[in-house]
Image (tube, rainbow, N blue to C red):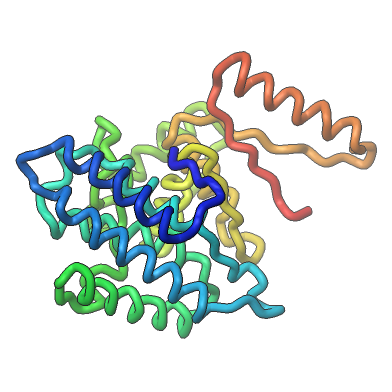
Length: 269
């Protein structure tokens, strides 16, 4: 977990650089620790530019970015095992993926997402001296469900992941109310995003979409893939604040006393 104290951006840049250098330096043979500083500089510059270019409006009131978001980029990079970072290209793939998950996923329309992709591409070329076309990394996905050993790695193409996800769904259906899901590219991308958030400490997400789009199903399956139980409140006519407190008390007991990882899933209703 990356702790974010109340410091200036310059101080945070120094701290994050030290954290990333220390992490990458554990594998001396890779020599990737020398890339830590440009990665952090690119992250800070990207964060500053995103905060300036994507301002909150009544229709986009959640366009607020702070240093905690920057810490989540570093936290995401630290989820990978050093043995899976083979070279500079693999590290940059991971960095691009984490910045997309933290910043780009919050953008609500294609025009904003395209503008962010171009911005990230500029930082990639300027700080990391790499010339990639946008399509090479726009659909990058990292996750830990492709293999049995739960390693956080770059995932294969969406079509190659379908058999693995079908297996995960079969296992889920054995002990839970069955879900009949058909996996396709957009579905797999959303599922992987949710699974990544739940994998992190204090991970939380707001899923926005029309009713019946599969948000609840994806959240339940992602929780199962992370070996977590899903807890939801059942609303009745007599449900009041007292019942809510009882439900929360039961959830916290399961998580803290019984040490059972829990996902608190609730809808806007």
